[in-house]
Amino acid sequence: MTISVEPVHKSLRYFDHLAAAGIERLFLNRPAPFSDSDPRERLAYALGATLYVPGTRPDLAATIARRCSDGVRSMVIDLEDAVADDELEAGLAQTVSALDALAGTSAGGMLLFVRTRTARDIGRLIDQLGPGVDALTGFVVPKFTADSEPSLAAVVDASSRVGKHLYVMPVLESPELVHGQTRDIQLRAIAELLNRYRTHVLAARIGATDMCGVYGIRRDRDLTIYDVAVIADAISGIVNYLGRRDDSGFVITGPVWEYFADHERMFRPMLRTTPFAEHDAVRFRQQLVSRDLDGLLREIALDRANGIHGKTVIHPSHVSPVNALSAVTHEEYLDALDITEAKTGGVRASTYGNKMNEAKPHRNWAEQVLIRASVFGVTNPGITFVDLLTELVTPS
Image (cartoon, rainbow, N blue to C red; front, top):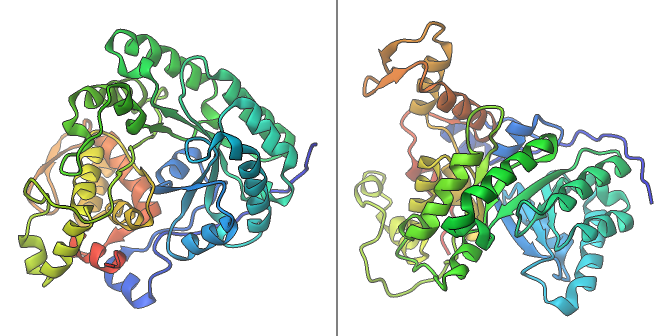
């Protein structure tokens, strides 16, 4: 069926679940609202922590609404790995029901995606959707390769049928991308394919769990994905082909962190004690370490260092750390302004007087920071990651 849907300009913003006093204390510039009608690049940065939820949950709509009230701003309803083969039809029906129920609500303003198994499933879901089209942002395509064009075409067709611009997020996780012999061939073809559908491609996602499975690897919670050499090599290739800051590049989001419970540690925790001691938050640091969030925080920092923004998450406790570390610090913000306001190039000391800012080579970085600042806000002078984490992460 074809549904005619008038554009509805819904908007949410990050951290608006906090008390007004907390927002005022933390932020110089409060995060600005966003909606799925925003420019594509800004919307890609607004993904932040993207939480997955199985499509077979009987309380699916209520779960999404509850997560929205807790500060989650992007979610994926999973009809692939999280759903058994004999439950797919029930999951599809449950997904349609949940999206229809969320339409017109605050949670319907989130960035909501459905991860389907096949291109045909995209059309089947659209066939069954009613008002839920308004709540749907797009689709996630797993196991994406150079042969996945039918899924891209299905999303374009779905957009035309419902009268709304829908996005697609390919998940890069197939053996062809991990194997060194075929990686360049695949990535070159994938880059060309995605470029043809550029206006509908929101971001490229990295599926490191499936990549590890190719070699029978499961990384330990004391290590980041960048310590697994063969996977780090694949991530490097993906960023090289798809992360370029020109008309050929896309926003790339980071892989999932699998751990969220206490365990006996072999190695030293990854969080320094001093920053927490200075903020009288040593006990809070211990709670982060006991929940394996120190490893997550380390991996988020390495994601950013490698040109990756946002992250797939599978547990609600991971959402706040990812989003907290997406906020732009006052120092970063002033550096970005110094660089983008320079019209003739050159080098000058930063406003904070602790580094050199080069207008030309740092410009791409600065432009990304300012987009991120518009979505996640700019912290007040003196506010550190510890302040953000203690405000946003509720220890259990």
